[in-house]
Length: 60
Image (cartoon, rainbow, N blue to C red; front, side, top):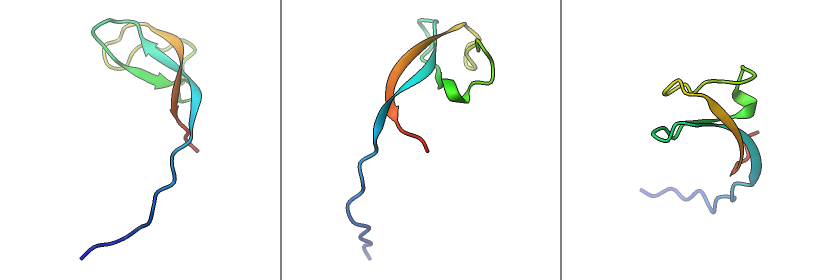
């Protein structure tokens, strides 16, 4: 049995402020709007993080 849900609408991408891990061995990052600290540490490796702008899918 096959289900047809029709064509999916493309996800809009927007420039988003993020915190990115400064460690070269870690690829951790988080959206700025989901950070509770003024200057967070990486939740994966505990290194410092820096602000960046990335093009990501829009969350509503």
